[in-house]
Image (cartoon, rainbow, N blue to C red; front, side, top):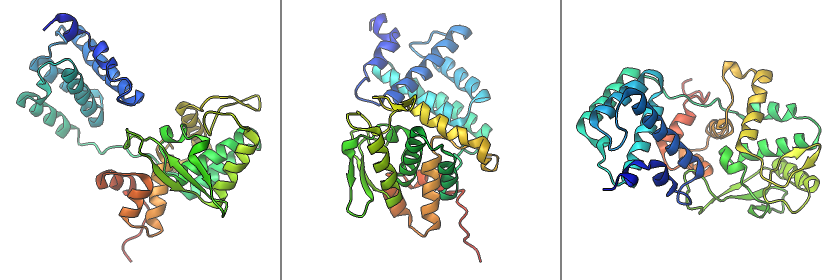
Amino acid sequence: MGSTKTHDWKKQIARLEGAYASSTIRAYHADVESFVCWCEVEGFEAFPVSEEALCSYIENQGKSHSSSTVNRRLYSLRRVLKLMSLDDVTQSEEVRLTHRRVLRAKLARPKQAKGMTREYLDQFIALQPDTLIGLRNRAMLSLGYEGLTRRSELVVIRDENIDHLADGSLRVLIRRSKADPFGQGRLIYTSVRTGELITEWLERRGEGFPFLFCPVYKNKPVKRSITVSALKRLLYAGNDKLGADGEAFSGHSMRVGAAQDLLARGFDVAAIMRAGGWKSVDTLARYLEKSHQRIWP
């Protein structure tokens, strides 16, 4: 096998363009680059990967990174080895044992985002200024909560994905998500309040915009999509003002909080999974574990 193919891992990851989400490809690149840089420092050859190098790398990563990060970096390396048609040393027994030892030594619970329940959502909405940006933020927060959306789903919604229903509410098609890479989509239904906020935002924003939510500069809408980072900053901005019981809101907070509220209102797991597009009960259980639902009299 030629050395160009086996060593040009960046070129191999580039083959994934169009087949995977850009965020997934960036994660693969960052994880493999971490391994390559570590090998250079420690004096190992990165490719082909040896058991000794990989075991040492896993042990090193386990000292300073979470279990989820170690797992992801191992999976990313496995993926690029397949792309390079190299032996998958990540599946060897020695690597498996090393990986298990690292995970068992950490004994850390995975972190969960602070849920933006309806109580917090209303406070977030009340914080927004009486400006075009404030209107956009109120509409975006309300839709994100009621749609149990991820940040990446919310920022790519287009006007044509929205149907205005007779009672003033909306039916919105979430075209593509982390759990739906081929874009079959899922439908969400909003309250009349959210419908009114979106309608007012559309009237003031105007027509001819590629995405529903856009940046606002000097009180004028800009014809491009708002970024995931901008939405992240909006959520972080409320942390200091609301306190959030010492926990910070993050990109998943609307999704977590809405799921917790649905559970508290008596909806069963199947209904919540359908509303949020979850495929795994285990994943949903993590979202719900901090729900303040009283089960004992």
